[in-house]
Length: 281
Image 1 (tube, rainbow, N blue to C red):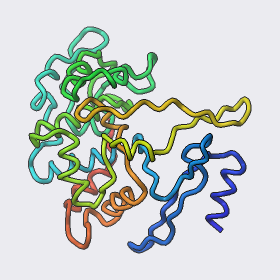
Image 2 (cartoon, rainbow, N blue to C red):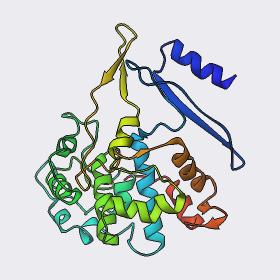
Image 3 (cartoon, rainbow, N blue to C red):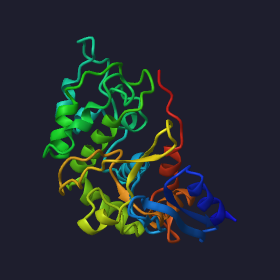
């Protein structure tokens, strides 16, 4: 019945394709793909098709941050200029200095005061992609973008905070963000297909992006940029490539309050802290 409904959603033109995995009591009870990952060439979307997980990258990064915090390798409540000196020179759009320097916790909860993804002018930091910059270079440039509000005063959904969190991971671990993710999170959780930098074979198998045009109800393929070379800047909060199986492992870590494969991996208290609302103001 479920498989029939998914296939019919493709026939009705609601989605080009996708994949679904259901877990019950730790056991996978449904795993299947439907529709197409590439419509023009009739390439099927399978249960193992890799895809960009977009902003699901954010809880993945946040999970690594709280793991490192639980191990006392970084502090969620220290001002970010304690890790990144360029953050000492932040300014507001008014030209004044912010009342305080934001903390890592505020970066993760979108209350740091950085420019929102939805402000006029779009997301200027995305223009840094493909410029041959490292994450360190990109964060230095982002620190120059004036802040519209003081830290802690309002909620404003911003990719800048997650780029900064990624850079702080690099500083705290002494590794690149990709290496830190692989060794600290992906490898221990068995997330073998997850990365910021898919190789050519993975890139060839990835699902394409599509827009649904309201004028005619047809899907238009969005031009997908080529893979970014290893080590170059990619949006920390939106650039991870993964698969259903890998995301299932990640999801179950949270569902099991930090336990993986029957053993504590992240303290329960640290996982629960991620679900506590941060009230601005």
